[in-house]
Length: 218
Image (cartoon, rainbow, N blue to C red; front, side, top):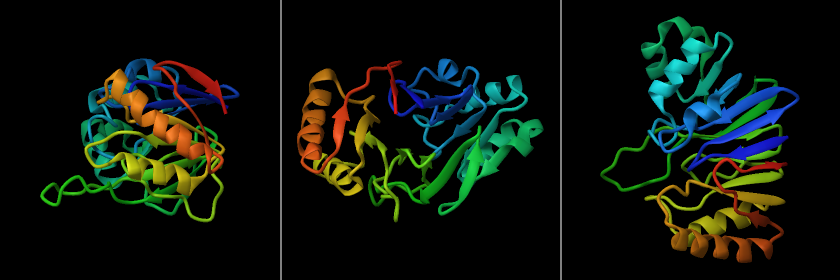
């Protein structure tokens, strides 16, 4: 499976001509990531994870494109593009479905706490083909499963470095790559990633940095 990292939280998966995109948000190269995609997984409603105008254009331009998202996001997209309503699917946590020929399992249900005065929103983590796990904006750990490739939210208004490291240690994936890094400068990113790489390796996780548009086989 080919994994391509885009700026911030967007990731594209390709295998045997099938293309699945996760979290094409406003911080990312959204149109490029969506080019040729057959399915999109959206973790939650925040703009850095879903670029609504770009998604509407993609739905209008690609008859077969399917979108999977929490209820609020799905309802918003249906309202914006009612003709594609049948291709916009609501996802609940604890379900299994197929998207672009990939097997997907959903986890979680709630965005991490930013502040008690900021309302929480729904957040779904996705495990694709029992391999790649995208948690969205949460540190929800897939239960009863062995994750092979972990996408690590290395920085956010709702997290601190110790929580990021503990998440990596708890999942114990064979390999990990950073996501949710769009708000860090180079110095801050190197600092956080050094902790993740050094401490994660003690528990069997090999961490590697991916630049925007860089691809790797997983």
